[in-house]
Image (cartoon, rainbow, N blue to C red; front, side):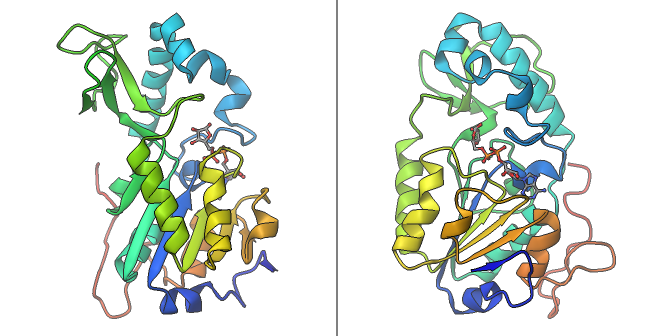
Length: 268
Ligand code: APR
């Protein structure tokens, strides 16, 4: 297995031959944008107790506390921009015959970077759900005008994210497993690979013959199972591994000027 250096990587070649490409991302892909991870040194779960903030029981017990925390995270994320790792993945989508991005992230930065074929496995922090009607709506208020926010029907709204102890949306899960079972290349970026069921997807892909590549700051339980594991910052490694030349302004420049990106998401 190849580790820790991009030269000698087969990834670029494998991608050129691939029909179906799947990418799974976690909090590490947004770390360089300023979004805290969960289990890293400054991760959210070092400072906060998941059972107080990210479970249905916690929400029933104290919806104000839970919303104060999500409002704080939304305010933080609203100041963040996609980084080179997000842009490399968006570009890979454009260059792949068939592509699917499976993200555990709720921050919405992949979409801002231009990714289209996305499955948000754990929901989206910019969507809210009425606990009575189940209706999901987008809410971009930063900060929230009132906590806890309420639906027009008067019922409480909850963040449309997947909490511990909750099942993932059935359609999202089905798409994720089908993609893992039928892809040629499965790229895993910035996840500690400990939270199920997402952590099982790379193994399924490998069992079905896909070429599995891990890009992460540090080794994970997935490292021994990957064909290649590259340890370092995704924003540095991904453009190199995907052979996307970075222009002088630090953004991508496509050789055949198919696609010129001056500055990612100006002023979003
Ligand atoms: N580049 C690449 N990897 C990075 C970077 C970086 N710049 N910074 C951190 N990482 C790595 C860390 O080493 C860690 O292995 O990203 C990983 C992030 O792991 P977690 O914080 O556990 O996040 P994630 O794997 O996405 O968590 C899964 O758990 O808390 C729940 O629902 C939440 O979706 C989340 C799920």
